[in-house]
Image (cartoon, rainbow, N blue to C red; front, side):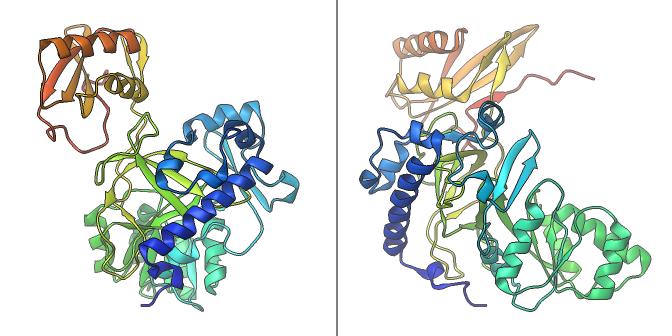
Length: 412
């Protein structure tokens, strides 16, 4: 079905060189215009950012810290590269976390995902992402405008009216959450409305199980997903190949070990870190809190950008043991103290009324002395005692979990 632009089929070297040049430019811009980044990157020379290893040495900006950071330095924690007076719109996501929209066509870069989902100029889109407080509705609408597609701003709720509008206006496709599309299709069937004009959909914001995707296809609707956030805009999207999600051309994605900024081995599950080239909101090494993993090779659809598996859960696995919080970063610190260990997972269980921690670690060579040393490190870093259990390299699940809490959930 063609490509959105020539950038999608660049060689790996062309893309890497262009993105590293954009990285140096955005870091220089952020150091000049975003006060918080001026402070955090004061010792960083943008000219030295010539490879991914240099990028990986920069500090993270954690989404989980934004609520408090914005409270202390409203409205955007000093991370904005454009003054509020020069922005187009401001939004509030749950938390609250305040987000922005600047001027310019397709500011959120959704046109690329819509095109990959099959939308073409002139086709009416029934948009059921929210237009209230959060930017989701406008994220799609500005992308649709860039693509040349008119939009019906359905928003959320009013299911019968939504189904009637689809029957009357005959849109080519739907955008919104997959669960709401299911509700609309069921309502249309209940009321006897003809919703057969819907042939395609771009969904986000929720999981899309294979069974639900198949159900949509049985209704004649081919559904693609995209991965986006209010802070970053589009991050990745599906194509007709349906093999993972292709990373957007205007961001750099890293996968790091949860609780750290350290990139994981190829194919290993970790936290998604995104650097955006958006000059209004230059988020550099933004820790999303989501888990994913890179896929090897390139997409069969012909797009050459790297791919991720999609959303695989949350990276924030902080838990409380004996009244004290244990964080993934603490487990990472323990492992760094012992180079004989390649990976680890802290398992928290209940023995009677007592919390029990066991750090399962991968090590090809081990003995009682190493076990004692690791246990001492756990106590020094976490201020709690824990057991140590060795497993062979490659035996721990590749699911991104650093802390697994197996304690039963209290009733009520």
